Image (cartoon, rainbow, N blue to C red):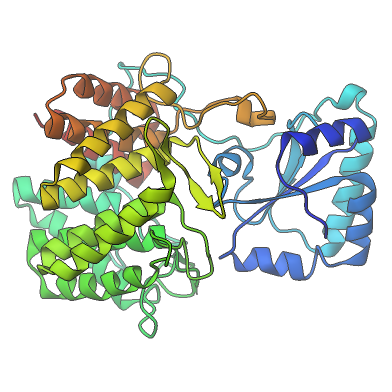
Length: 458
């Protein structure tokens, strides 16, 4: 299968040739993606039809999370069909060769009947967008977060089971305030189930992305840096909050695994199957490792982590230009809010651990860049910088829930570190922006509640 890149030139060519776009969104760590490549996209009939009637575009979800956020149709691989203008016609996820051959014909025939390539009307999922900073929107409650706690097996929901950490962080914060044993049970039960169940790779270290069963068995065996960084931070906080030796030992082992993903060019690779270093996941890994170094009183771990983090910043950070999503052989992809916020949080963690002023100063600079580059009307932030050459839904900036929660927490921390009163108002604006979406996020409403607690601290 011949894949073209997502560029303005590719879409312009589709318009000239009057062809729809076959968009495949995949990931290096996704087994189903590799299987679809091995079978569906290797099928001669599929290849011939796609070459004759489509332009085929491949996007890696880790390299272009902004495209994934707008066009993902329920998982990986995503198989989407677009007009040359980037409008979504329809699609789905995994398609076998027989089904793909039929769909390719149906979509191509429908597209050919359209005047000027207008999109076919389909009910398709759209990514969530916190559209307005509605200060009157109801705030979530802790009861909303813990309503789906699994009393028997730990975690949240039935199945599949993901190792969600924001509800655990909220439970620990509430325990520190109230000493209510209920909150400790939620954390202990969940972390024990994660560490002792099928999600843990006891042989090679680290944790898989999620389990398909309620009791944490039959995992999907991708091990992602982001998942493991968040779990490491949870183990560190649990060990500090409750003093359990089990959590301390788990933090030590997981720190070793996360550290093993270090790149020789600085930063940390995004997964065992990946080779690229991405800003947000590297920053979260660095922050978690610095927390582990403090818990374990491991000066060597702290020094190694700072060296890796600074090595990435050396290539990815530009004064006045923020942090690139990735840098590879001179190629830079810029313009994502999440990279700035995660990097800023890691810089504040480095400052808190070392007291070195350059970390604080760089965190402030990254914060000011985010303010210049990603402001949303009415407060909060949009997810990306819109450029002239963008096509389709990329021309529509979103105001994402999770990134605005993270931004609220980051700017609240920046306010305390810098004593710049501007940052407190920015933090409140991001919190207000995320509020309308918080109540529909179930356990992940904890992200908003944690950010609200950070903003309240002066």
